[in-house]
Image (cartoon, rainbow, N blue to C red; front, side, top):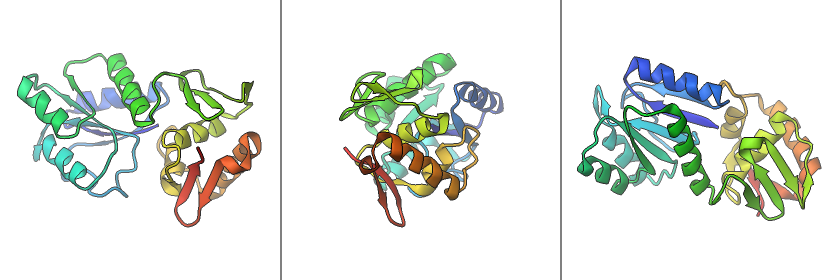
Length: 218
């Protein structure tokens, strides 16, 4: 999982990155609207944690811009603003969740998981995609009831594809998400992991869309 944090507070931004890293979640941290991604190609993250009060504007500006551009990336607003009008503006404007500062990082991570389950159309911590069953929190997967012997990289690759089954995941985004510290692996290594995963779950389950990326077939 690769997360974008847009937060100007130095202490909170650092604390969030450390908390996410402890959960094997990689992240990038930006501190202003000017530094935020402007297009879907730049916004290759699983989720965005968006502060509202930024040095060069209000987080709602980013939220509205992204949603008007058709960007569907899950966005959780994190803010000290607790007024009902602000919460309604955030949720009506396209935010997937709204959490008030100060908050426990454990709660934030739980909310992130809940948002990502909804985004992946999964109702519980056990994901079902045809006869594939994935348990993200236990790092386990099975096929037709038989446990799969997957390496950590193969499991994370399957998990990232399963977040959007039937949707093409760009090759660059997939390579980025496979590295816990956020540094993309090279495409040659990605192809090796994909080949190994195909061998274990069936080659027909992962389709290559030439020049774009890969898709987990439903």
